[in-house]
Image (tube, rainbow, N blue to C red):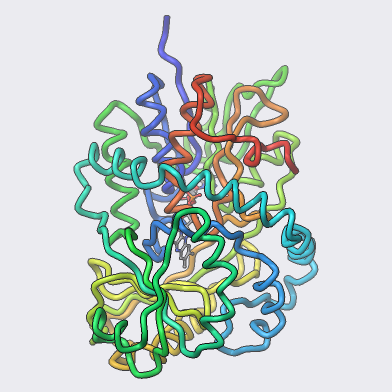
Length: 416
Ligand SMILES: Cc1cc2nc3c(=O)[nH]c(=O)nc-3n(C[C@H](O)[C@H](O)[C@H](O)COP(=O)(O)OP(=O)(O)OC[C@H]3O[C@@H](n4cnc5c(N)ncnc54)[C@H](O)[C@@H]3O)c2cc1C
C-alpha cells in the first residue's frame, strides 16, 4: 500500500508540530509556506509555555476593563477606529463567551489542552536536538498595588483548583529573586514549574529541520486556491509552482486560515490580534526568568537575542501597516517595574505579529465539516506556542482514528 500523505499549509509552530507528529503516525508530509519556517506569528512571541493560563482571554473582569484600556495610552488593547465595524461582531461574540457558564466550559477545555503541553514539547525538541531552547524556570507575576493583586483573586482560585498553585511574595521577596525589579513592585505571585523558550523562531526552525531530516518536504510558495470535488479536496494551486494534487490537507495558516476555509464553504470568525515586541540586546537588565506585570497583559523574557518585551493586542485587520509606537509602549510599561531598563538603541528591534484569534479563546482542532480529507489546526490566539506541539499530536491522532487523551468536541470546526 502506498504511504498516506499530508500537505500542510503553514510553517508556524502549529504546522511544523503537526508535520512532526504526522510523520510519527506514518504519513509522508509536505509543508508549504510563503515565508521560511517560524517567520510568521510564531517568530516573535513572548516564549512562555503558558499552560496555566486556562481562563479565556476575554472573561468578565477583562470585559469590564476594555473601555478603560481603549482610553489608556499605555493600554494593552487598541482598535483602529476605521476597523471597528469589521471587528465589532468578533467583540460581540467574545462578550457572549464571557458569560459565566461559557467561561467555565472554555476553562475546562483549555485546562484539558494544557495537560500534556510540556511532554509534547519535550518530545519534539528532544528529537530535533534542540532541548536547550526550553528553560525550566519559575515565573513571577508582579503587581504595582494591593488592588491589582486582589483583582486577580478569582483567576488565581481557578488556577489553584486545576492544580496550578501560586504563592504570594512580598515586593522584597520578589526583588530577592530578581534584583532588577524596582521599588514599584508591591508584591508578586510566584508560579512554580514554569517553562519558557529562549528563541521561539529557532524552536520552529529546529522542528522543521527535523521534519526534513525525516523525509518531509518544505515548499516556499503561496497557496492561492483549493480545489474540491465530491466533498474532498483534490488539489491546491501554488502561486509559483502551479497545481499540486493532495491526499490529506491540513490548514495551519495562522491568522490567514479563514481565507482558505472560506474556499471550502466554511466561515470562521477569525481576527488578527496583532501583537508587538521590542528586543533590547543592551537592556541593562538581567532577568533569570520571564515575568509578567499585572498592569497589562504581556511579558518580559530573557532570550538569546536580548530582553524581549512582548504583548499588546491591536485590531486593525491583516494588512494594515504596523504601528511600532505600540512596541515602544511596552518599554514604557516595563520601565515601571524594571527601572534599570536602558533606552532603546540602534541594536533594538521592533516587530508585529498576527495572532490567530477566535472569540471563544479555543482553537479549531479537527476535521472540516464540508471536506472530508481536510483538517484544521488554527485559532490559537495568545497560546499558540504553548499549545502547538499538543495540537500536532492531537491532529495526528484524529487523522489516524487513534484515541486522544482529552475530549476534543470543544475544538471541533462545526461549533461555529
Ligand atoms: C506579541 C506576542 C506574544 C505572544 N506570546 C505568546 C506566549 O508567550 N506563549 C504562547 O503560547 N503564545 C504566544 N503568542 C501567540 C503565538 O505566537 C501564536 O498563537 C502562534 O505563533 C500561532 O502559530 P501558527 O502556526 O498558528 O501561526 P503562524 O506562526 O503565523 O504560522 C502560519 C503560517 O501560515 C502561512 N500562511 C498563511 N496563509 C498562507 C498561504 N495562503 N500560503 C502559504 N502560507 C500561508 C504564514 O506565512 C505563516 O508563516 C504570542 C503572540 C504575539 C503576537
